[in-house]
Length: 560
Image 1 (cartoon, rainbow, N blue to C red):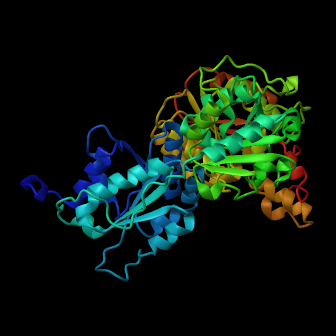
Image 2 (cartoon, rainbow, N blue to C red):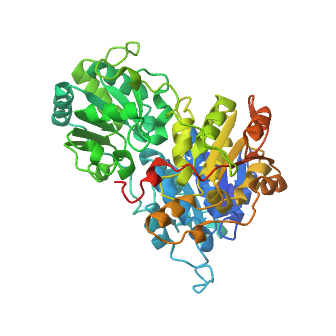
Image 3 (cartoon, rainbow, N blue to C red):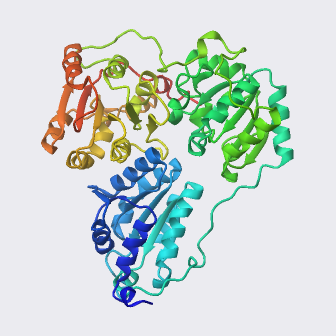
């Protein structure tokens, strides 16, 4: 140990190790468990700390940052209630499968009855994240390096729990290997020749092959490989909802598979005889409860062996990186040469090329209570800059931005739906916006989700992020209203009849607040939103008529 090292505390080593591993942005809420090392890290050159107002906000901001950059998103919360507050967002981050490191701490061992002592290992296990305790002062550097590599190698969420004694003690001589017990990178079994030949045989025999491209394709940078494979097979390409923009402009792209398919896309899905699923989970929303897979041979490829056939049985599962499998398939099919210009698929109907929004024609049903949400989304699509990212929250309104807002390119359409929760989209959009690579980041939320995560409007304003929050405001928990009606139960508890003003609240926090409830309001708002980069945060309170019901909830009780 050098003399210089002997003067350092463990907290100095934690801060420097994070910097040495490329951590330049951290989202967090400060408390006793992290304030010392976080203050030291924030004093280092070239870093940015974004202080959230709630722990869940910090975690989803890091999730959005990771989704936008492909780098590890890093968040930090204090021990006990800080970690507990982050649980819901942590579940969403785990299911999103973007790489994230959440750094927390433990209460002092000398205080076994500390009021903030919680069972961190049990809390983290419940979310599906990996729990890495750091109690050995000699393994600080190696453990932080291994944790960051683990996040990246398997798109995992790791919770690093640093003992108070490590932070407060003197820096120890560092050992080169990570502490025992930490799992290594996940490596799927290699796609052997038999698997690839079996997949090729199924695909070559197909009369109408269809590719379903999920987030795994985007993560592996394999979209161009999918296009080449579709050319070689004369196949149609579809995507899951979160990857809508991945093939924007490609004539083989037929749209979203499942819940938000157009009638034309649905005809293609029904006609398909062999389905190649690449990095997609085949959940009940994608497959309509499995009904869209009926009568098809299904080949599923995923890095996670447990994902294969987990939701629905498949004919062939390959546990390997999507890109590696695509390259192997192309070699077998003789498609390793340079890609040809995209050409229309010979077997698909002429109207399947989804060259923009997932539109369904409608008759405007705006009334005195508000605007038709479909009309509003069409207006928003025309008004927003083309250089934008859309992040859709959970709720009754999901159908409308998902059908009527175009995904203008790869990475331009995201959702906060992975954990089945509302109130995630504002934080995800804020995390993405810290990179500032696009002119506008747009979070589409319901009024329920807005008020549940409203604290982070202050963060967005303080950081002057180019975020537009569109509050689809019907004054209710609308999904619950339709479910209550279907069950023959009173719906009064799901309504919020008191007058609330999301725009005024946002204005008080420092945003530009706009309220829209008529066609005239839309025209006036257009003047303020049309153009290029947002010059700061905007909250658009969009009053919509409750007359228009989403297709999913119009049939509540009958859906798959």
